[in-house]
Image 1 (cartoon, one colour):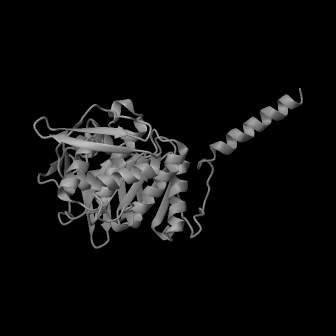
Image 2 (image 1 turned 45 degrees about the horizontal axis):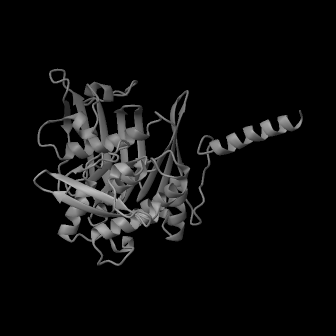
Image 3 (image 1 turned 60 degrees about the horizontal axis):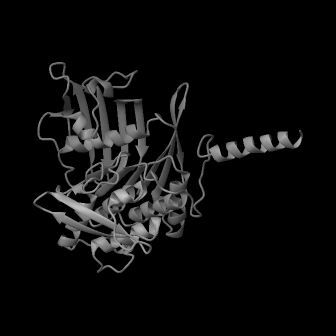
Length: 360
């Protein structure tokens, strides 16, 4: 498990150190640095597995970023042998990843230092731009989770073939049930009344999935269902897949996308259940319902000491990060201005309008 991350001169942070928990939630305004934390972890993870003396940044981050020079902070502090660095501490080891821009190879990011003894630490990542409803999905990449979740249906089929079992505390229908049944059970728990079947065509390298419910006489294509179902399929599949492994972290951007508020809360509970099962979960979210569901579940399972929330906000003097703890009752230690208080602001505005109209 990743215990702390420290970065110097990386993107919007000249210097930042954060401690991470079993479930770490990054919340706050847009362009406030939440994604930067995830990208630092992705870059270090890719570097640890790189055999050359440089790393392709766009491939590591899953998005084209242009020149690696853009990763250096605007007002960098002086570092003698590097342009920026990322230092990660795990349970049993620590690694410094030091990077320097090579003027002769402007599209490659050189690193001066990289630990090579962290291969047992795996990080899986689902970005915000996950693959929505499609007639069929790509098959392949047997043991990996694609960042857009495109191979989730194939992994379900693969897991059944491998007789892969989810962690016992996540087994809603008994530990002996097939992986696909466990995925179906959790999708039911989050959005309700879902069943599906998956079939892989190894000649065409594609996987078909069909959804049904109690009202449907025949199963339908994903394109005949809402985006929310396809979006959570990859999250549930990735989470249960990770629960069958050791030393694994799962990073998810915006797990609330396309979900009704009630489903968002239940998604938060699922994420906390993953953390309880031993999967380190790092979430970037704009949803108060994700946080509420997670802290309620953590309190029920008496697991709040392994949950951490960070609130990122932009100030004139720079980005401020407020650490928010969760007590045994699920209550938050801080409720800073701007932290999911928009509903209160809107209700006050409506009250003012009603009072004004009542006086006319």
